[in-house]
Image (cartoon, rainbow, N blue to C red; front, top):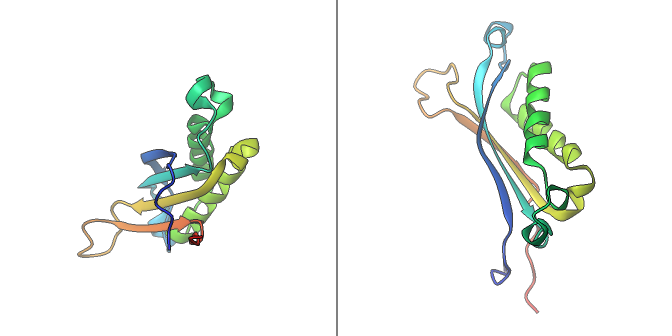
Length: 137
């Protein structure tokens, strides 16, 4: 059973759009495709930044965005699953010393216009290291 009585602190980066060379064939990868990322960082406790108003006391979403953009610009990908996993790993590294503040990370990658007939809403893949269930006393 989940414990729903805890306060929840989450930083979200919504609809980060980046052009990525992504596809199963060289032809599909030749032209970059627009991909949207949604990232959620759930804190273990209230970040000190709530009171201090200092960047050093929380996760820097600017650095995370820059690291994701760098990864996507330098690496072609065959599959959305691999792209999502590599973005997750890049976020983990980007957090550096602030990683200890984070309970879990959720990354969803949305391939907005896959070249598949009749798919009009895109294709998404999510990587999340969600916490396990909390036992009630």
